[in-house]
Image (cartoon, rainbow, N blue to C red; front, top):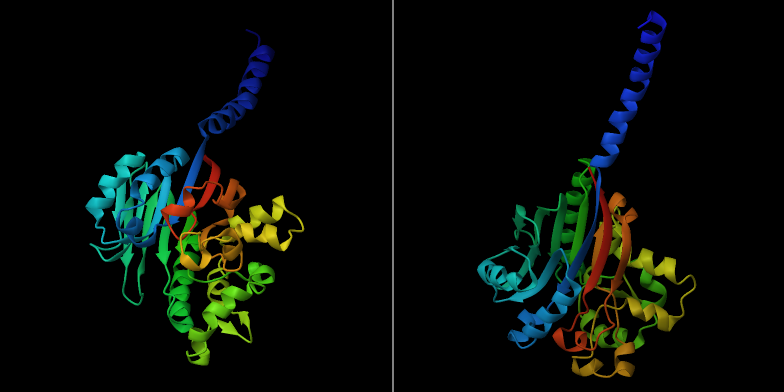
Length: 316
């Protein structure tokens, strides 16, 4: 081989080798679908009455990760046994019983912390699918109490994001997002129902001020980079929603409760208090996020509607 040919062959190898490395890196990336469910199941599936209907619905949805609130009277073993019925071999709870919070998953769960100190209910911080999952249930009793809980969650989330972790914070927040103000402040039956008890609180603890809702609890949490993906998806799909269209965002109450037991009655009481919030990178991988209200069975499982988010996740 002549020296000129040898030089050209060596040069081509040097040029093509980095390309081969890049291609290998590209092929090592995997893309997968991830479905996340959050569900407040109304006093332990109404003492078990709605459990079997819920299991059937969850199996139709086939979530990969599910956060649970109001697992009243449930311990971790009971949730683990139940989770096997929707093909989640891994499940953990906040406490050993009482007014419990849970998380179940198709993949192994690592518990980072179970936080009850300083909280009325608490939160569960875990990792699964490489994501930090925080499941919470904020106290509805006072605004100052909620703000303390929200501030704690804000600090936790900001720390995780500063550490470059991907985060999902979900649960029953018993609080409202300011992006819902336009339609929420028109919910006069809801305001009139809450106002008598709210007016008995000290001014600092009131959720309704001059006939309108206060949004500082969710504003505190959303000072982090977390994205309200349900609202974002709704805003993208309906550019100038009517008031009736905005009511589709309502996650509470279903028609199971006496004061909201017809669609007409319910329309005056709807509010959004259940959320799935995600870190910015995850929010860019969202394919669907909504409050699920499209099946009649959801009217009898709980007084809350489930919230579902679907992602197409790329991971190295």
